[in-house]
Length: 465
Image (cartoon, rainbow, N blue to C red; front, side, top):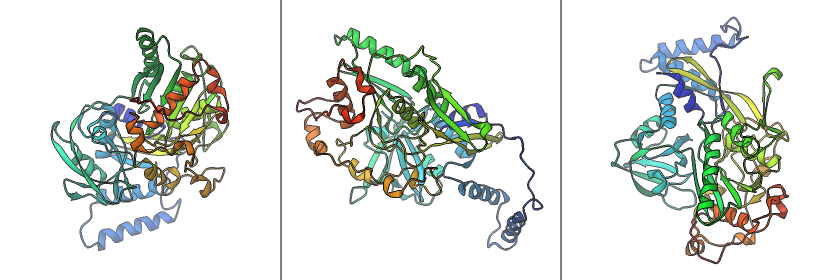
């Protein structure tokens, strides 16, 4: 197995760096260094001699490694065999399946996000859904790779998923027909005179792809009778993160100068500052205001971009509080078939704010009203601060502050049914586009305090977004 594609694949999970397996100053460890290792070896011998069934050494060793890394934080883990292959498949695409990003949470299979346009997305599966059964078979406290393997299969075949969705009283079944999954990191469309660019993951060349998307949107506006774009919506919702370098490249697309993000490790010598280098010759749309859409699924690299544009007053952040993952993982190969993903640093926004636990607070809070279950899911959304063993923010955030996510605004009392009657399928996106349209010709939107941003109301004119 080659590590090049696996290193690329690891970038999908979080902000990741690749380090050599051997590092300077690594001490040889044995029982003479720490007597506690005697206990480990003693327990190993007890299990080998006394367990009811014969136990394989590889199983015991993997269990010990998994337990050691799990005691650190939720993002440090050991990767081998199926786990490495799953990462490779995620980045290289071209597999037949449902198009889902899933994790194991308390023994259950939880959907992080369906890939846009995938069979799972078209079937109506949502971030935060739990898959309890596959073709009627209960999948609880089973190997996640087993569930992933079961969901993959030949194009055109179907599988029945039993879904528990927070906010609904009863589970329900969804039959999904498998298809060939082609991962699209960047998609875009022109809505009236507003450009919308969706970044679905931070894989290779995302910065260049977004630059190309903006050029295409400008061309579309010029040839469609619109004339010119009046604003840009950068949609980072449900984006779990990816390459730190690509987060910097995307931020640099809209900034002329200044710090984008800083990375602080265990040693001062490992601290790094990433600055706008005008790799795209400065802000490529300096004449246009920007709205960045985020939600509870926007994590890691997504939060780097949102934090940089917010701190530098280049964009208005809109939506819901982000996930709150402010740590960097390094990918350390052990041999050709295994590796360790280890948390090695925290990152900070230009103002020195750590998003760990707390995430990025939007300048304008906007709920997803067009989804009838969104409010209930939002109230039960799992963020970094809810994960067992997560890193604690150095600012010692209070639990009650992390739970103030309810959006109680009289403007947001419209129901999903009423929005559907108006042709509004994505309220958050509609709100962002409408805000930019109402401020056409006023680039100061992106630089104004959030409280002064115009309050857009749901349109009474039917419009499909």
